[in-house]
Image (cartoon, rainbow, N blue to C red):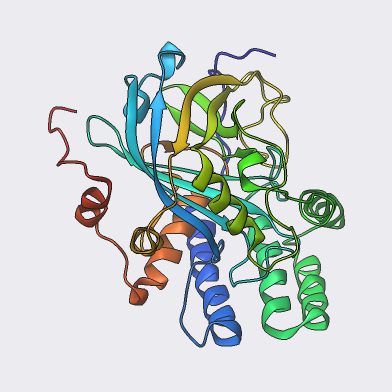
Length: 346
């Protein structure tokens, strides 16, 4: 199905609800920190870094003309990009544990626009329809991490009683999580596909995604039983050859097949290849440490739509809450990526 990206209607939480969700992520971070991180607040999600590296991003002229704006305004080749691959939970677990896997990219466009692409391997959908449901599921996970399974069941009953989740939401969202974590074994992060939430450039609503490159080997390279086997696999691959992913977009087509306001629906519009992400070698430890100090946000470089409105607020609050660990400034990030000051004429 081919879409043109226009004709959408935005649906998102009120300012008051988004403020409440931003406060809630702080409570979750503090509870996990006290239980598992020695009291030090860290990322609200995706705390365990699997690999962080400086890659290169190429954007081709296949970008649809109507969305050639902002970071996608013009083609570029070999643009430095900070890449952080991670597991989804807010504290470290072994890679053998069922989990969502994610990737966050940060780059500065040729005209200096700071831009972030945040994606997970959940098959193009979220386990929650909207931000309120997402944070309700996160409350249950936080309770399980901090106080165990019985306490998590009590929290789940609380979310159902207060209407933050319905029984249907619980069944649909829980089924989705099981399918993408417990029933989906990840052999390598190099062979996974990753999807972002809906954003827009100009009048065009779209989702971005990464998919394994044709040159990527599907052969298992390490034993898939170690606590850090996903990292070990990437290091082996990078020691042999560059690792690449195709960058794609999907355009809004209609409110049923590509809804802006329901993040639990897999978009069925066509994948359009617009570029390539490449990591050429094993990263130095200091580079990984510097990338861990970056704050990613899905609204950097793009206008939010649907759940991305609240995601922007929650990611901003999450970064602010962990600032004691040391966040990189924009100037430090530019130096890390070797890019100059922005072009004032952009």
